[in-house]
Length: 251
Image 1: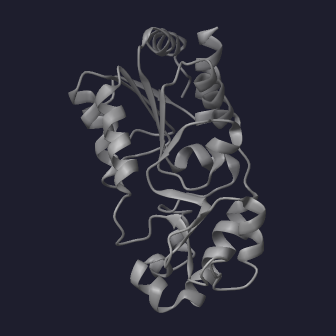
Image 2: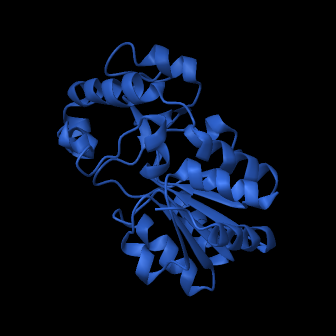
């Protein structure tokens, strides 16, 4: 499907004139960086049993859980680098065209691209937390060293280290949830980028933003549950292609 130049320009004008624009990203933005989605035909959960990310399993079988965590999230997915869509969002933040960035992704690619303030709804692989003393470790070189020996131990107290992302059956961190919903309700423009609205409670953010008056711009490769019910402008295509077109139209 050809991108509509009229709709791209319309989106760019809305973003340029918006007092408070929120970008909300999901797995679709990172696919072009080589990170497969978790769900769907090519999803990770078709290749791996996701039970290793159940929080009870992690505490009961930390070595088995960590073996797969290291393999999938650090050795395989850890090689991914930001793509053009990430880069555009970082430049838009620098130009104050985006005022809040909420991501469901745990891949740390927005930060690598240069975004300074990222609300990590589901946490990040870029930080470890001690399950005993709650110290956090976010130095990449230190994390790489610590996960050489599994399960990794806290350098301060010897407790079990856990990646600081949300496991199945864990609650969303209160600060991330509160900041996300506050930003969504404040938004005058809310951009959905690469997420289909299948994961709750994150999926509630665009409808909440719509209810409080935001214009919803959706960028996805195919229609989603948002498209008819919530979206005002639907831009169908790869995130990198659409975001570069919007950036060009913003000039």
